[in-house]
Length: 225
Image 1 (tube, rainbow, N blue to C red):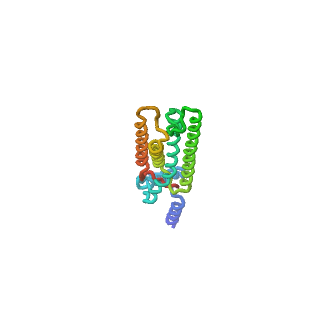
Image 2 (image 1 turned 60 degrees about the horizontal axis):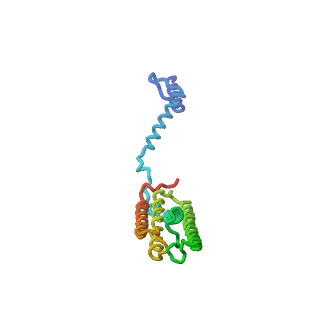
Image 3 (image 1 turned 120 degrees about the horizontal axis):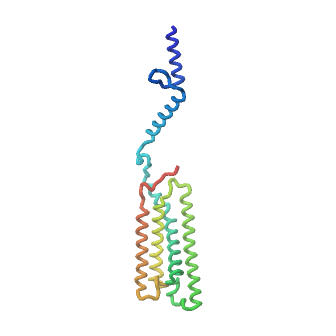
């Protein structure tokens, strides 16, 4: 009877206090047992979390991949158009002073005070238009990034900005340099056509590089928490 009672007490104690036993059969102190259980649970958690990175990454479906590229398209192109206009106006119009907006038109010569004032006004309106393009692009960028299912790829956005910059060079070069002949890239030189063609080639190159960078990649898709 005493042996069965002691055995029952041992079972109940084993259930209520799951202490590990030493080599001599005696239980470990409570603090040592708790530390041992903590190490064991930590190792089990690390084992459960050690999954390959490719398995833990959610593979985007076709719609999500297209959204990753299409969301920054409009704001990126507008920002690129505006920044391209800023570079053209600040560098070519003001710093290098190679031309003004109406310097080859004929009615507004830069050799007279009145013609220079008219060209300065046209340059200011040109800068205002490029500023509006950048402002609208930033507003669209804020709208399309608010509440989206995934974060926006910086590589894709930068690609569309380069594409917009090249688009500005291409359209401005074809219209103002060749069709309307309002001005040329560098006036007063013998090979001004070469500068105009180089401006177009730069635009096409920027569009090509931007298009390549804006192409979707699986690692560009990062789900929001």
